Image (cartoon, rainbow, N blue to C red; front, side, top):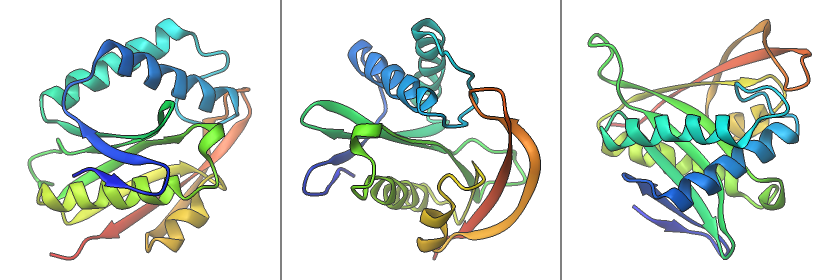
Length: 177
C-alpha cells in the first residue's frame, strides 16, 4: 500500500528495524519538543521514546495495529497508527493514533496524506468506523477538511509537554463499505 507524493512516500511497517525505531523516537522527541500534546512530557528522553516505539512495533508485528510511516530522502518524517485490535463488540471500529509530522516536513500536505493512508488501511482491514482524539486546536482543521465529524471537547483532559492543561477534541469518520 505504498503511496507517494512529490517528496514523501508512505508505507506500512509490519516489522520495525532498530534504525526505524531510532528515527521514530527522534520524530516523537521533535514533536514533544515543539509542544505537541502526544502523551509525553518535556523533556522526553531517548530511552523513553525508544521504549514506547518498541511496544508499538511489537503490537504492529502481532497485527493489533497498522503502523504507517512517511519518508523523504532523509528518512522518517511522519507516522500514524490505526489501532485495529478492539473489544469484541466493536469489530467494525478502529482508533487513529499518534499522527506525528516532524517540524521540517509540516505544511507540505503530509498530515493529509498520512490520514488518507490510515483510512485506506482501515478500510482494507474491514473497518467502517474510525475515531480519534487530538489536542484542541492542533489538527482540528485538517480532520474537518478531510470529512471527520467533531463529537465534542473535554476541557483540561490532558497536559501539553510544558505542564499546561489542554482541551481534547474527539472526532469520528464513517468509511464507505
